[in-house]
Length: 76
Image (tube, rainbow, N blue to C red; front, side, top):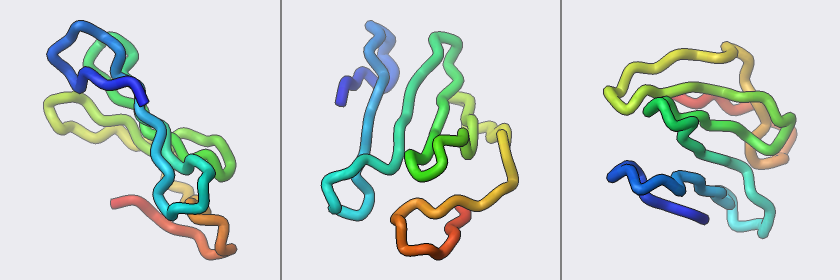
């Protein structure tokens, strides 16, 4: 985990293990423009983009299996 979350001396990359299984499910990164990418490791597709002003830009409406239990989750 590298963090600055956004004073902006940079860094801004976090990897999270959401279910405690030792495998990361979520990746958060700042592309330098103030837009955050959130991705899930299960499938690798970007789920959502958020501007630092809180505006959401859906990258996909498709649900993803975030915890590997075979049930699709949808982030809200």
